[in-house]
Length: 190
Image: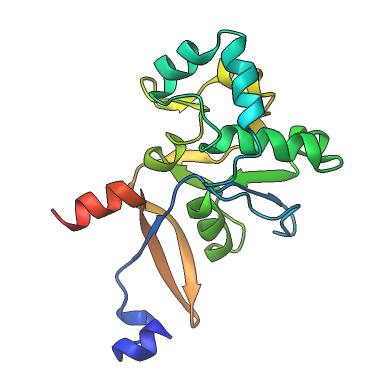
């Protein structure tokens, strides 16, 4: 529809870029792409009690120091924990590498590449409560606190650079940009 509206063909595209609202949480089957539950949106507060328990146990400074975030249900890490705890068999399937987690960027790229690429960028990973912003990697200590298996996580790639190819109207088009909403707006507005 966008191509028709612009009066161009897929072959005229240099690349695709993905921008998204960052904290919405999705969990899907790696083999089929079928979601195992509805997405949990960023405003959902069902994990507030989990955050309260972690805070009461004295873990908030650890989360803050590693992620730069307050310990809050707003972020996707506790939402992922909730899905793994409440969807029958999800944790075991995730540990076997049968499920994939992501925010909307990961979900879009996974689908645009026909399931070939499971990635995110740091602007999205940094809003999960699972990503150490100082090391630029998923953090095993935080993963353990939330009981999230590393096997379910997307690879973290550069925000700018080809991470995969989408096929649009029979034409391969590189996906060459990923940025969370605020970072994308900042870049777009120079």
